[in-house]
Picture 1 (spheres, rainbow, N blue to C red):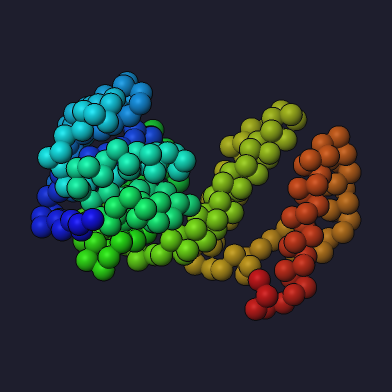
Picture 2 (tube, helix red, strand yellow):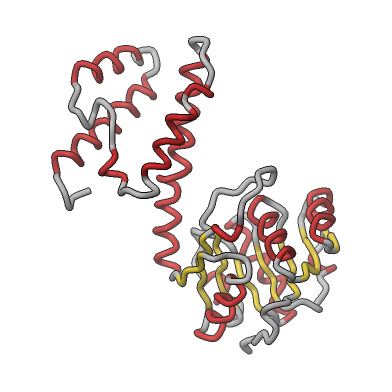
Length: 271
């Protein structure tokens, strides 16, 4: 296998494999930075056409339609098909990266030495604009040269670029689930509780915002509030009684409260 070297990292030709949230934001960021999006591939022709239109690329719905005149393939699809997609691309002898937080670089290295990871550590939605310059980009390459190339490329679209190994990236992805996905699920629980009693979620938005702003300048343990951190057993007992008809929510409340108390009792250095 041969390793590909890219010479013009400021004006690259990029093919996007995928049309989801990450693919959409990456394609737009690269286009805005002066790179050329050659093609956008998706199994859904409409999704491919929509993203391709916005970034001035050709939409394709079959990997046999790939234009070999590209410098980089970015695979931004579900984790379980990354390998099969890469298998279809290695014949073009181009640099291939994936954008997954939970997939080892080895998945690509099993097929090609010209491989890397380009993982944006951010929650992204198609219909929500993001200042991509603030998005942390986690980079890993098969070789030192590829890593340096990908870091230089990443710096054209973000001011927050990190060199992160596959093992570190998996920890980051796990931490992100705790920091983003789980809280969002808890927001949903809160919204449902309010709705059942004729109140709107907008009442909680200032509280959520203030909580998020606190951890921008403090470690989370230092700004923990609520009945559990105060060891307010009476309030917690009332809350648990209110959840008697919601055993799953009662279990979640109880477990989280117990963990907060445990962390507090463990003292500094154990959180």
